[in-house]
Length: 224
Image 1 (cartoon, helix red, strand yellow):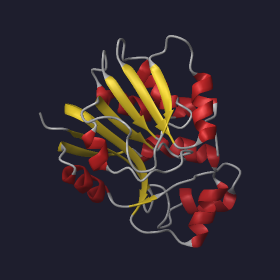
Image 2 (cartoon, one colour):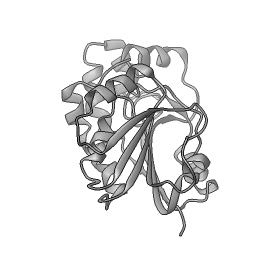
Image 3 (cartoon, rainbow, N blue to C red):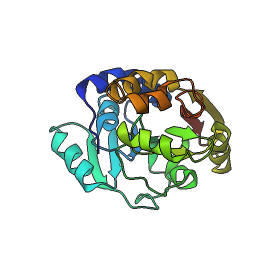
């Protein structure tokens, strides 16, 4: 699994700020972060919830341990072991749900769908999802380029698929935003020493970032 380097955390700050803006106002809110990895996004949210709380759920024991070790006393966040196919929380438990795969996800992927995320949202709550997508399964050479760049995951779907799934889960005011340009600097950094992977993923071919491969954010609100 590839950890976030300090430089990469700085480069990814605009993506995290987009997630935070989706959830504002955060003061006093209870927020769930799915696939919370080693906690970077959960900690950033916790900085703004004041009297609220952040719960991060993660399948990987290694990343869960790293997140718990990084937590300092007084920070309103806790990290629990995720279940593979459901959220271990009651209905309407959270003001916001974040499912965040940022650039090169290190989390183990769950089978939790948007209907389950919507279940634990309170009326008026916000769901925001980020994902690396492609319209079809990439060929072997592209998969190899991903491995070379420590990019661990790709969702075969379109932006319209994500919007449709969110609407099927009962969400309204669904909005899709392209964030590909915000993650390009990290891909460039990761691929700086991999000429073959860089040609495939950063060039002008059909599977390059911004063409065959995209990074999106999808946001919706649970009706009141």
